[in-house]
Length: 211
Image 1 (cartoon, rainbow, N blue to C red):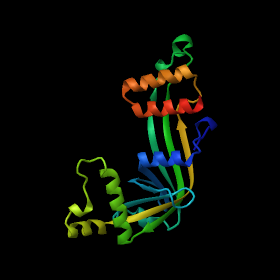
Image 2: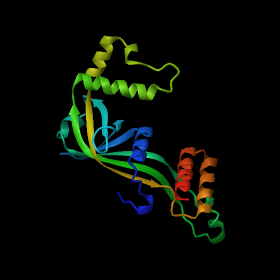
Image 3: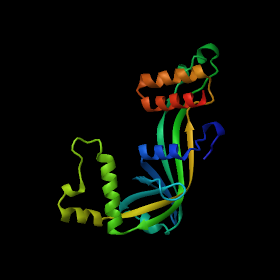
Image 4: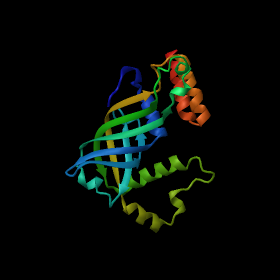
């Protein structure tokens, strides 16, 4: 990944936050057929290893778990807040017209090795944790025990667990850090007016950190 110094995010805890808040990752593998991309919701266990461990599950019919070698190198990409930045939002544009459009974003590239976990106990635990995480904001959260045991057992038998043991995290937060303060503030206002509050807030926080 092209990573200019001003956009680099070295803080592991910040990269973990992005992964947790934007947990649909793109798993990139290399097979005999070439590069493959799979979009999966991941769990992060930050306590394991130097960078953490990612856990997920795939359909048993999905060849990803049988086509990759156990321990093969993979990449998982997580994209955080993102959005278009119009030059019309920059006060400086209206004075010199020397401004151009851009796209601001957060992204994490998680490098590691993939391991197939085809054990019923592991699969059930991953599904349980994913469910609790994503049902947490529901008024009456769904639980695995809500479903009949035989039905749940059949559903679980149709999926396979995978684990990615992370060795490196590359983080990028391109948030107009290289622009003048007033142009950044103009872009933040423009984003807020369009309803992109997440990106606007990220830019505000970066402005505070660099002040």
